[in-house]
Length: 397
Image (cartoon, rainbow, N blue to C red; front, side, top):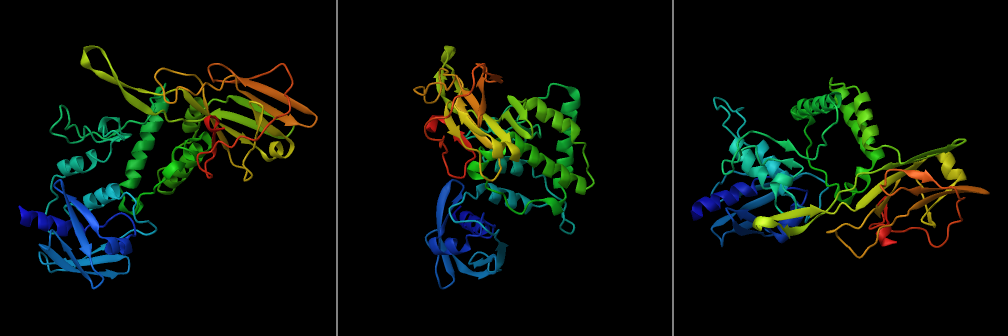
């Protein structure tokens, strides 16, 4: 068993890791998890490494972006290329998993038919595609029913994209299905496979969930598909966008144009609640909403904005601005001490005139106020969690 583990350690050492962290790896060492055991691997400046209390020993060298190793279990030198522009400390398990699957037997060897990799794919990805609590059934891309012999109906060969919203009509559902088929066809070509995963960080739940960013991203995808001979009509996707993000406010005076659309807002999962029969349920906090404000150059030049009586400054670069607010106080919810922000009044100001709009109780429209807008008072809204965020969170002031 110890020999098997030692051989496995060397195989892992020859597998590309996530990120161009070769210098960090040889400086600080790495910890491999093999069959539930944490095994430390130590590198020395003279080109040697050891693991398993000296049972595994070998030599290493760097060849450009490759780390080459040989050991007492395999004297043949094995080199692995490392992706660039990554930093030490990044999570590398997901990219490591996909790289290992890419290297699995695909039947391309002479006289060696490809083996059945369903079990390997399922066991590799099922544990990584999970939510923060470890539940793979709630993962946005779920492998729970791909090939899991230990679960009822676990071997259906299904990969579920659980984040997709059901469409209200057949033509839209067909358009989404066609888009997914085109993406599969495009990405199955090795030329189009990404060489590394991109860590979107906080930008994913900030800018990338705004209506304008989502449409720009989809347009880029459609352009790439069309270049590969997989052109799709953008019209049904624009209809879906219009349905999903109906305007809360569309205002124009002269050349000045302002639009407000609802934006996607992830709802956090909160703790277990006991239910009858000894069961527990988990709720989401659906009390938060978000909207996106876009304005053309004429509006920015001639008009100003205020929200709840305080100045609301649009980005100087002409980009969109988002506002997160609490629509209602639910039970249970996160931060129950924070009151809802309604009534929420959005005011438009231009010397010597102005106009005010109040968000209705359902959060579905800004309705025109009969009274004229008052001049904004106090400090501008600054409630950003990070300086680079485009979302102002009213809970932060």
